[in-house]
Image (tube, rainbow, N blue to C red; front, side, top):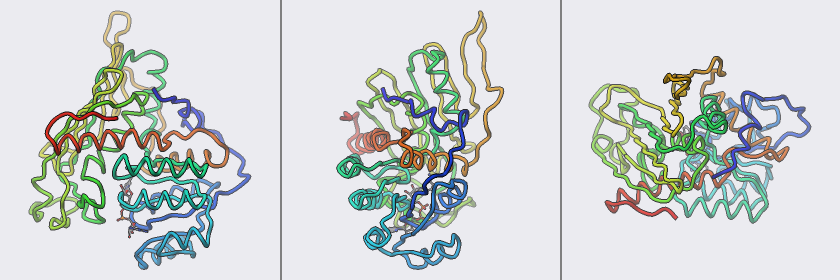
Length: 369
Ligand SMILES: NC(=O)c1ccc[n+]([C@@H]2O[C@H](COP(=O)([O-])OP(=O)(O)OC[C@H]3O[C@@H](n4cnc5c(N)ncnc54)[C@H](O)[C@@H]3O)[C@@H](O)[C@H]2O)c1
């Protein structure tokens, strides 16, 4: 089991202001969609000063400068690393570029945070961990849902013994019709997969964190493609995706077995024929259960089955979670406080994603080593 002691360091419950003694010189690699969420969050973290950006597309660099006022931009990260020598590199590229960018940054002596998923495969993730270790630098996976107050509520309950042994976790990241119509999200060789690695990863990382990060030992799964590789013919929020280059799944279902005996089921889709989108996980333990979305604990008390809701939880939006994840990493770089999503957490999730895809390819359960 992982040590979740990092939980308390930047928890919403105990957040404390720190005096800003030193600013981190921070560079963003990949100035597309999600870099904006990073820049917006960084406005609220005085310890971070964004000194440079890098995108292979010159127009993205231009937009980045115009929107965020960061004048120093590069088309190659090697030039950025050599000229700027930042403290931190924040990798916001498509998944297939996370590993080479992170490794180059570690080798240049930078702390690194990558967007989710950590990479496209366990082999890439291992190379990232090795590079960070060899250079004595931090490596953080940009998972954000583990910072959600609902996760914090569950971990506190689990640590207090209210849940007992966790037997089963059901995870769902299901869109009725939400195939990204930007970027390269439909291209397996650039992303590593479709909705399982792109959105399933969010619910999976949060659920795994809540479980205490047990070791995955086997996976079983299947994938189906039936909509994304055809032109869009119905009204939807993101129509006209690039169906001609679509090589990923529309729906993936996976099951993970852990060394504790617990099972986790995950359902991920960009286009599931269901009533409405679902983004949730539910946990069943021997003493209690939990619904993440409603932040409700289920247990027995004094002869009654009770549903316990928090009297208060901080309300959070997308931006708040980005502030929390970047702050946790920045504080780790500056003050040595524990990372809540170190490379090893990213690797465990990567192994589960990889196991599900491998099992889907060969048609039976596979071992996770
Ligand atoms: N945490 C979240 O909630 C969340 C949400 C969306 C996306 N993401 C992740 O962020 C990453 C990027 O997604 P996005 O939506 O911003 O995609 P995007 O396509 O909008 O942006 C990616 C940018 O990276 C650039 N790029 C590609 N190769 C590069 C290279 N070699 N060097 C420098 N720049 C390069 C592209 O030109 C593009 O501008 C993905 O890994 C995705 O999974 C995370």
